[in-house]
View 1 (cartoon, rainbow, N blue to C red):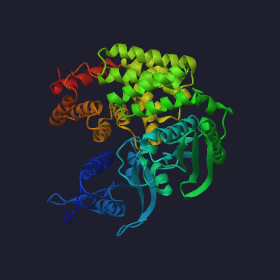
View 2: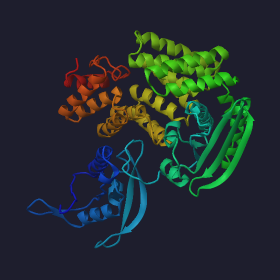
View 3: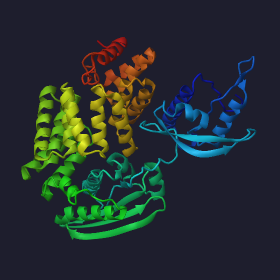
View 4: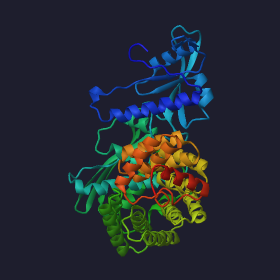
Length: 527
């Protein structure tokens, strides 16, 4: 069309909405490489209605006019749809829609219902609008600031933040944003109202930590995100040995302020107190932070520190989980000479932790994924269900369990779990993208899977899991040339990849599903 506009006509409303959403995702990806002043952001309006075609192929009519008006009232980089489109697609696409009211549009009689598209369970947002608030009390714990000036001490303030998130996420009646999303704000000056909108929560907890010898000073504030008003603030000047008591006190005061009642008075403390040793807890916290790097060196050092923590407290269950994950990583990444032996070691550590504390969702989730790697699907499902039962509000547990369900023939359920996991973690790590994409792919929703696989590759270009997934997506959608290019990228990361034996194929239980994936890999030349 004249100027800078594009008009497209689709045979179905679902195709139009999905295309609009994917276009915005691709434009966002291209903008990332450009300086802010050169980034182009487009608005898209989608309407369902009759159009009239001219002999030259152009179309016009009220259907086109309404789409153009919706585009004009939309947000840059956003998608706005009419009520007629919403009614057609609301149960057919993996997206969420915010109602933005009935709009009076130029030259159209009557009001037009309008909705803004928001990602739900997907990781590419086509909207800059606020996430909807959950029905239950919702909170994000922002990274506590290290006021000591030594970045090597960040692990201490980060560990305090992570512990508070873990404590709160154990409560069924509280919606708690996951660590990965909270930590995207680390080191940044934040506006409470903006963070509340971006994460979709009513409350924020923020604070600072300063250590000096055996003393620690902690400041904590609970903030109402919508208004920026401080609901509660406290300063603690205590012996470093009192850190557990300080964490308990902060948790209790949050729950009182939010009016959240515990089903059992001491259950949060019981969940967390897997060690009473401050020294063991410090070693584990440092190691856990290093393992989060997902590098070979970081995982090895994290395992070493967890082993030292276990020497101090032989019943420290989270240290056992850390060691188990290190063995699992060695098996899944090829760092180990014998992957099967590494998986068996991981399994042994996970089961040892469960024997001491059956309520540890992290341990059940780890064991479930190790069993999946060993192709013991029935046992993996049983462990995943236990993990979900004891940690229904932990984003990592939800995502790990979803992947087990997806590979074990329950992809539709896995998609629902991933939707919740990604709402709890709006800024997810790359492996969340892989779990979501595979759930969608195995559920037959290939075009949506492609969006998530692309986002995983965008977040981590060397993430072979999503590289392989994107290869399969392209083949299944008939885009073989793109699939072959993608397979070449995956082979650069791991030249040993074969069609029938790789990290993508091994966990799949359904023989037909597995053969479909293997055939896709063979189509692009993998042997």
